[in-house]
Length: 209
Image 1 (cartoon, rainbow, N blue to C red):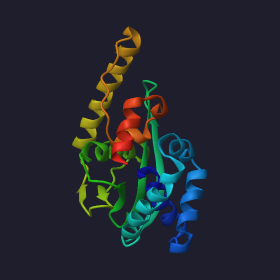
Image 2: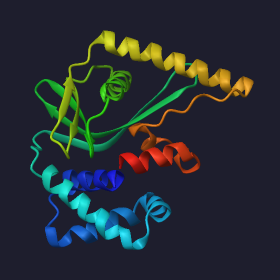
Image 3: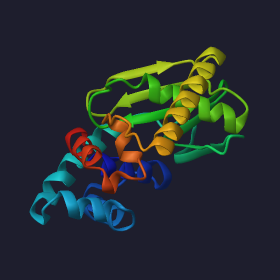
């Protein structure tokens, strides 16, 4: 449900409001035009799809009331390949531009949860790619109206750089020794390239969706 809602939010930002009479068709198009078709088929029975679409409709009604001034892009991929051959990738739900710079926004379809690390990582990637800090990074729960925002600092970015380096070292050690790393499910699972083969990730996404 969460993945479909994000696709509908991006459609709204990029193409304009979705009329209520067109909403079901818009959802079906987004499912058919992305990898959601496989996910929906593996997680839902056909009879359950209508209920999911109605949940997404309720979220969209809340989302459509949010201000959209300064919108500069949706589902923006930011990537950077380090000198050590490590490619870092993040997908920001929406980017807005104003006189202060760029604001990076992550939409949540449930509660906010612990969004700080994810937002710090986006700020880190943005700084690597654009050679400047975003003016603001924030997470917004469309469902509850909760909002968390922070102005990233160079110290925040440096800490994330150290954390990412440590993670890369742990992964390379795991590959070299065949030692399995501990798995920790969370909202980040939906972006994982091996989600289709990870039972823990699929279960987490189903619970959080």
